[in-house]
Length: 201
Image 1 (cartoon, rainbow, N blue to C red):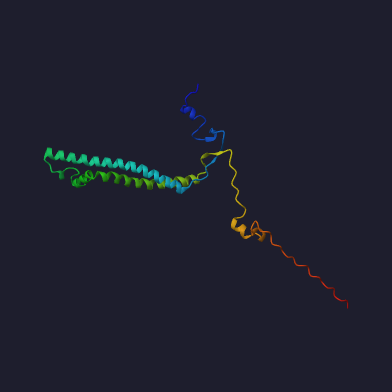
Image 2 (spheres, one colour):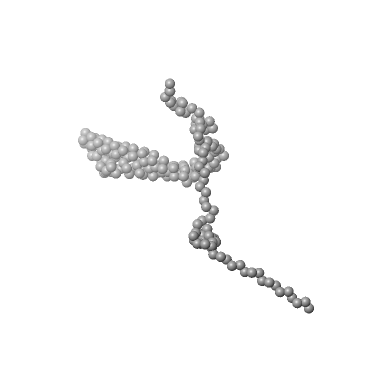
């Protein structure tokens, strides 16, 4: 009877701190080592993207809360002015009456605008934090353990020709550059010159 896989069986042999006992596929060769250094530029970019995403979500929520607060203050001022007969300018936030009305009326601009502003601030903070963490990791003497899985059977590399076609054609001999069907051209050899003996004096 085959039991369904559970979380404990899936995580069997895996440790969060040290991956030395990581179970791998028999057809894969596991190479264990340490991560010597990380790219500060890549770390800063990742931190900026994460900070922008988080800031965008938080900013949208803050924009919604701001619009709701503006509407609640306007309703509260209206009720107090009707009940006590007090001018709305004399109530709290009375001098911001026009701004509160604009926020409530243009909520479709306030919510995404607040999200973008907070997102940009979060991106700047994430960029700085990512760069600092990357630089601190490179300076640290303790590096994280990593496991790289490589296939056991690696295809042989494609051998490149020793010389390029253009170079081979340039250095080819006249016999090699001739047409395949044409007979080789005969070459003439010069006979060695005969030396005449000098007459004896």
